Image 1: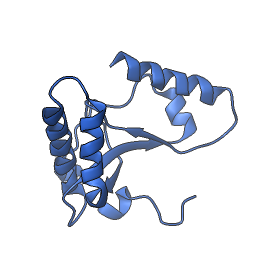
Image 2: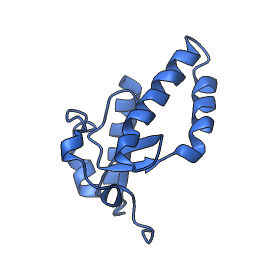
Image 3: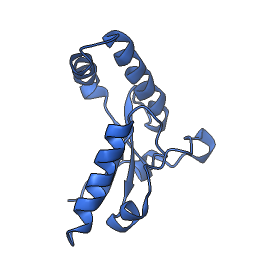
Image 4: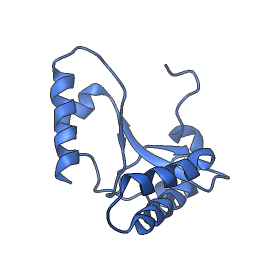
Length: 126
């Protein structure tokens, strides 16, 4: 959506004005991301559902929440033993600045799925 594209470009512009070297995490909204990091969210999924319903005051709130829950459940096949998960595309500052848009053109394929250990962030990362 246009608002998300503006936020994407604004963050790129802000990042160009600094020498910081963050790891950038792009969050999947309505269009599936080419995920390279998945986080289990079983412990917070009900909070997510309530937040979505609250955020989408107009329209069919329950339908929007139901679709979001379905996406989270679908992603969970990447997290052993979890029922719900969130997908992210994580990259370096340099890679993020080289992107024209968020990488959304490659679906997650179970046959090419990294292990859970590869997808979850390291415990000792800052």
